[in-house]
Every structure is written in structure tokens, then in C-alpha cells.
Amino acid sequence: MLDAQRLHALAHREGLTAGLGAVLQAVPVRETAPGGVAAVPAHLAVDGETVPNRLAALEGIRLVRLPGTAGGGLAGTWAARLAAVRAGALSRLLEQAVERLSLRTFDGTRLIDLQMVTGDLADVVAELEVLRLATGAAEEHEAPAPVVADWHATLGELGWSTAKFFGAEGYIEDHPARVVHVSALVANLCLAKEAQR
Image 1: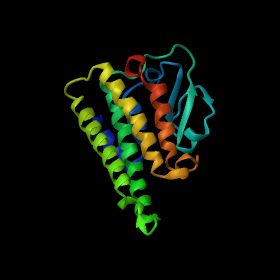
Image 2: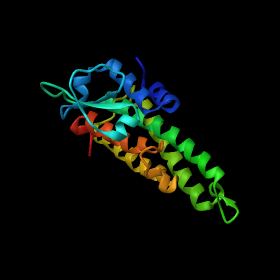
Image 3: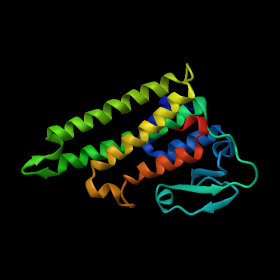
Image 4: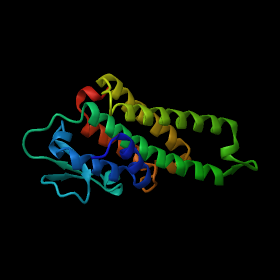
């Protein structure tokens, strides 16, 4: 079984879909669907009607309406582990943003060298590191539900901040920044209501 730190590293290395798949190896899919719709890696065989979602499909995630009773959703340590997955995927996207900002210029200056951009990047990096450490600590000391809900809300905010580093590109569906949208969707579908705010 993968702990939060390993899940973070997996999502950072291979993406949101890989991290979600690792979580679903240890938790029954039905338990991750409090609303009756599960988010699963597209290659995972799950019975149920596919709910069309183009962005999720481009990210390699399938939404499935499960027959029968809905599960309770991810809470406690599992909600913290999903936060670790989301943080890892966002860290991956942030590295792509840094690469892009290093290549683009404004008035002869690389965008990454502009003070405002550097400050914004530093804020996102610092908050992601705090989340990585906090989700790792939740392996030993389960975080209260409101804290985990705050982590997921913060990840949503950091995602939008990161998407802005791509300019208008960050809002195009075939761009890697779509992971921001899909990550928020996965959290919305998978988390127990007490792990959301």
C-alpha cells in the first residue's frame, strides 16, 4: 500500500490518473462515490454507465455512474492521501509552468525573472510543500475533517493560480493545465461530504 508521500511522488512523476489508480487499488470504487458517480482511471474495469466528460477523458479518467447504493466517500487518511495525489499532480504542472515561463520573454526579460512572477511562483511552491508535508504527517496522526477539507480547497486555489502561469493556454482543453479542472472534479466526486467545504 502506498502512503501519502509515495502517492505524491507517483502523481508528480506519472500524473493524476496514476495517483488515483493507486488509491483505488486499496479502496473499493463504490466507497469513493458518495454521489453515486465514481472517477476511475479509464483502463480500470468498473461496471456502470459512463458519464461523458471530455476533460476527464483527455486526462485518462472515466466517470462511471455506479448501480445501487452510493458509498460514503473518502474521509480521514484516504482523503489526505487524495490530497497528496492532487498536490503531486499540481507540482508536476507547476514544473511545466516554470519551463514555459523560462522560455517566454516580455520586453527582453524572461517572464520567470520578473519579480511579480517569481513571487507568485514562490507562494505556490511554498504552499504545495506545506501540503506535501501535512499530508505525509496525516499518515501517523489523522487530520480532522475540516483540516483535510481546507487542504482540498487550497489545492483548488493553487490549481487556478498555477493555470494562470500559462496565460490563455491554461484554459484550453488539450493543454496539460486541464489537470486543474479534472483534479477538482475528482475531489468533488470522491470525497466524503465532511472532507469538503
